[in-house]
Length: 244
Image (cartoon, rainbow, N blue to C red):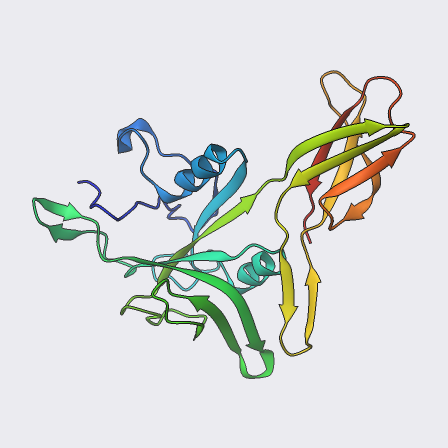
């Protein structure tokens, strides 16, 4: 019937499929008050762009067998430098009686997953997360049991910021392009190694408007490149965040 102050909606695809860059229709009320489009709107407010997605977990009792967000999906997001938002809610508890609202938001909670560990020989899959209650680092096994606040993880929300070019400077036959964007570091606790995983590729197109793009130089984890022998004629440049 409505949204309780301090709560927010998440619109899931009940088939278990991933819903990318979704914004609810006017039927749900305007302005849209949902988490995934709100994250994109906040990024745009700050002068950036971002992609978001929502997906029910594979262990959610309402998710069709063989579908949903898996532990392998979680690993892929974290390995790419994107923490995962965990959305806690009882699987079949869709509303609660609130003051002045017979079908208000049910109990929910949000957390942030930032790491994982697995022991394939024993079938153990751990997720490391923070609760937002200043309770430090916590962990739970990937599965349908209650994780925190007597609630399981109903689904996840992904957030992937795009790079944004901040300056282009030409001097003595060279051009320097600088940008903002993710600068994630992936740490292997057991191996004691830390490596940057946010890699970028500068690309060039001579079409108008830009159509086909070709790579210029090698991928980089830096946030600027200086190109030489690049600046004759008309050309368009972009910076793309690469998948791992």
